[in-house]
Amino acid sequence: IQPVTTGTVRIGDVEITSAPERDVDRVRRDDLGYVFQSFGLLTALSAEENVELPLRIRGVDAGERSTRVSHLLDRVGLAAHAQQRPTELSGGQQQRVGIARALAGSPRILLADEPTGQLDSHTAVQMIDLISSIAHDDGLAVLLSTHDPSVQARADRVLEIHDGVLRPA
Image (cartoon, rainbow, N blue to C red; front, side, top):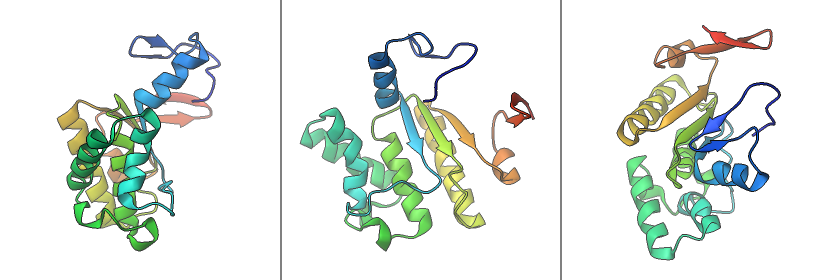
């Protein structure tokens, strides 16, 4: 999270602009999930291990990690590919692993940076369907950046940055 230059940002009960760094770190770790345009997967790890990694970092016990990872991979349609490494998966499959990893810690907010940017149009629709379904089912807020008008059309609210100013589209 970049430093705020004006205004305030509150996530849950934490005012990010004035909170101690340890509180901001906790918000980053516990309340935010990240989906990257370039997937951000570790190629030395399997799909399962990539999804499990944030849970290991948090110290979640092995049984709970296993259950959560299996559930998430099933939810994104990749249970059968759990042991495959990213290089053995298609772009759409890699993005679904990235989504599962972002959801592993049960975040309040999903930040998705061009999640369809490297996908064909059919797979892009599938990814937006998946993100929309999860957001609806889990009560998750999604902040998604895109240049794709078809993705923008699916949003509840669209904002744009014009000359450095955030405004309604």
